[in-house]
Length: 229
Image (cartoon, rainbow, N blue to C red; front, side, top):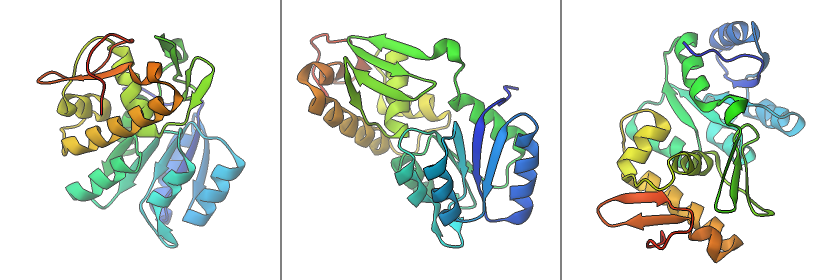
């Protein structure tokens, strides 16, 4: 099993027993901050940077989704009792990198975390003037930064790692989130928002993403395919 080691981890969970057990498990090889409320978590994110966040949704002072507004580039894994498809879709639409339904063992949570934390040897991807720093989760087109959500970043990273190859929305969903697809509109919405942000930088940046009828979406490095609308 892939292990998560030497990372700054934020755990947001109001259940005392679960928060303590997760803190104990991950503290063995990581620096862990544990918060029981949304207010505590927002304050922690303002004062520190984290490599990954494990987030409960039902908190005593609000919905954990609100924390995602303060974490545009940090991978967030939602850990929730809310297991309906619409809850999972809402979480991904808000920018979560993964969604785990309780109950779940710390070992499985760790394996899912490891999927979101690539080793430093894969820290940079640069094609067509667009550069992703995977470890820092930053994106630049030439010298201009793109402010992407966690989901937008993950989708772009996957397409750049497979440059020139087309994927359907369902395939992107399953490859990025490592689970059966629930709703293709989720991917289409993220891709549309991603291209708008790239278009705001330049036409050349936006032209790196393309769609082809019957084949799906691809990072094409500036080839003359139909751009995503």
